[in-house]
Length: 309
Ligand code: ADP
Image (cartoon, rainbow, N blue to C red; front, side, top):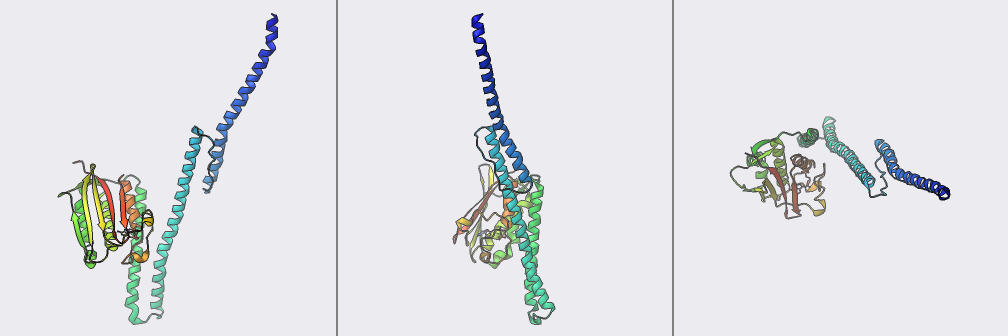
């Protein structure tokens, strides 16, 4: 009985101490859990208001830390998207405005007599070129927005990609002849059936070939190779023209990016071609790569799924 009486207060003390400890422990653990969530909640409100500069502080290495890290990555992606969107809109406005200013200037000059009559044809031809350029930009923009809107839902069919290459060559023949360019065509077999979106792939090949012609030196060669490798069709378009400096290589896929406007030998080009190409190839879950050396030439290579038949 006595010992019971003696130990009784100790029992209470230990119960009180352990509950206190448990309470403190639970308090800190809940804080560790609640604090980041509260931070995330606050930050998501800031992001919703269109401000992308703030990030969460990552203090732990557990699941909450991982969640915060992924949250930050999501904000990074949103910020990048937003910058791209703003830059795109300002590029579009610029690309449309510049030719319009030229057109207006010349048409005004003709109407008010500042440009003498014998020069009318000359300036009207420039106006025509600018209108062609404008309509090119608008077509490219429509293609891009259609591709964006299509999401992953583009339709695939089986067709001979070499036939498409031949068709593109015929369409571009006058440009090839104009620069006296030779073609070195190395097809891997008589037919190469792929499973892809025919129109989109025709666009890719046309753009690559058009660029190869544009950036080739006169009297040069353009090489087109098809292969079957690792169960995929591989298509290469290679030119021996002006090439692309190494530090520019990663930028060429960006919308409206042109390495140097004056270098494009015919002065045409919207800088949208390669971004359309990249978009199309990504929609096909395939890859496109580029190798280039200034003054030596450029080689674009992309893959396509083989037709199963
Ligand atoms: P563009 O309409 O100006 O050709 P693209 O998106 O097709 O636009 O190409 C972007 C830029 O990449 C071009 O302006 C050019 O500077 C560079 N480029 C593309 N293809 C080639 C090539 N075959 N040789 C050299 N430079 C190229």
